[in-house]
Length: 185
Image (cartoon, rainbow, N blue to C red):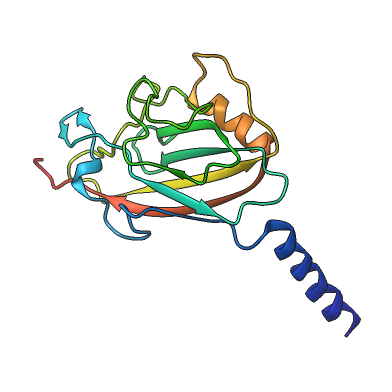
């Protein structure tokens, strides 16, 4: 009985500390659903619009001083996955990224936020583009609540930014969607 009451109190305290459940969603891409072709990369044999989707989040943990957003494909045939987007230092009072916030140059990002170089070799959104005929790849969209802004060199890799994000994370919220291209596409 004592343990049950203690466990209930701890769960309640954790919920209050987080201000509710930390959640991420997109009005453009639904969780566990196929990603629309418009979010496909424009290059590497793909011919999409290469526009980043709108993302919205709520319920960040108390003490959040900044956010980071990542999009990662663990199914890419590289041995290490593929980073499609890394945004750091989104101000704590911002709870969404507009459609095409990931444009090259960062003009559509909230003030203070910046993009990190991804596996396409640029600091911008790099759309989905799995090899034709592969089973649909999983794309993991994640927002991290950070205990402080992070500092990385201007030419930092997504892996270095990921290390700093994880070292400063108070919590995260994610959803996964899929995208595949037919053989011969």
